[in-house]
Length: 614
Image (cartoon, rainbow, N blue to C red):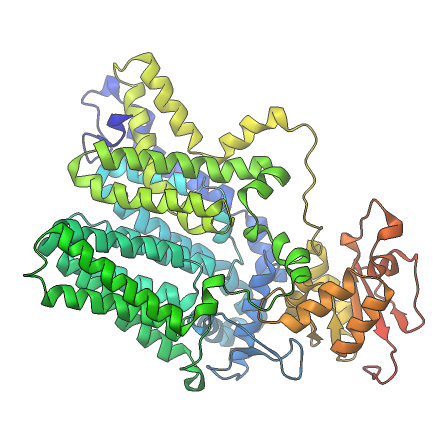
């Protein structure tokens, strides 16, 4: 494996004679492989479903489009309240207008020519592939500059085979995670510049600031990048100082500018643990202050030990100020969630689950996600230690991202999203080197080992290896979500015909109801909407008294249940709402409403003191 990154020539035509050439030395074959990989990610049927029926992959995508529609309808730029969620006060959203704006702009530009429905469908369908094209371009340029054309093209193919990565860029996936993946990759490639370019450091700082403004999910990766720049200055001294200074100053300035652009002036002094706000801005400004201090004291910080001591002392001060500003943020963004809401909702969200939970519920998926990530991290670490000198910096940073992501993903699955973005940077050169070994005089054991490694960097191989041991499919510990058919336009059309009202439904169904009807909803799957989450979780998973209490306290006009999620091995212990949908229970204070041809069951609430909604 020592030679994994020792690829000889930066071109497709590595072998010197036609007899030694393989099909993979032909750029046309390589591009065909990339196209086939993209074809598996982007089925035409999915494109038509998004364009014609706005069939979106996830509830977050539905909520994003609701925000975009509200912005186009005249809701203020700084007004981040979803007013149809728990009206009349609504619920604040922690998402960024920086993602809403381009979507709204494109839809607005296309609407006069195509009409609103088609404009929405096309923009929502094409936005994620456009981001993926930008992602692939960054991957291609990064790998080609270090290894050549063939490894770069094979990296593009590898990107189509990374578990979970393609789904972030699927048709209709307008959530912000794909934007963050793109920005994090740009950060990594900028900091990996072996020439310690100030220009690249500025690009990395801007990408980091934009990522923080969009959301804080990538914060662990950003911290790794920042520590890498800091460590490079500690080791290299004056050589690494320009990059350290440029990166931190750009990060601080960019973060502050984007904060002012997207944040209501009335909230400039408000701490938000789940969004860019003063405590997080302080970390960016503090890092810039450390870099400025290092510049002033450069002559006195002449040894790595002194630089390390200076960095440690400054780090203690920066962290202490952060803790004094926002001590509650140390426990994460989900303060205020009652224990039963965490148990019944948050702990069952796939991206919040641990590796152990995922291995228990879906072992093939877990292996496909975690296996290539760990192997790619180990290969990158090996290259950082024993690879060519000109690639060691990039390999070290890539290994840091991959291995830290693997460790963090043991606790939360969503940590895989950002780390997995770096797998193609490793897989492409490994694939290319495997081709070279198979055509050369290398020992058989080395060919087998390298070929096996290359195969194990492909997620689907792990699924196939697990298949003989799978037996019957394991049952997930999480409850069945509101079935996909429940959130479609066809399912919700009958609901939209009812007089306007407030609907108590499963929180995962809430965004689809907001998107496809004129009703308000009690709950949606967002931690800032705690009151609605409590009502939905307590009411829909409890007995008759709990359901009645949730309807009364929320002021709901309608109760809606997705019958696709009505399954229970023990009917006697089933929640009352489920038994209502099954028809095994009734309540005099609920009036069943006919919704023929849909998987939804609906009732009008007839509690004392509540209107009918008519």
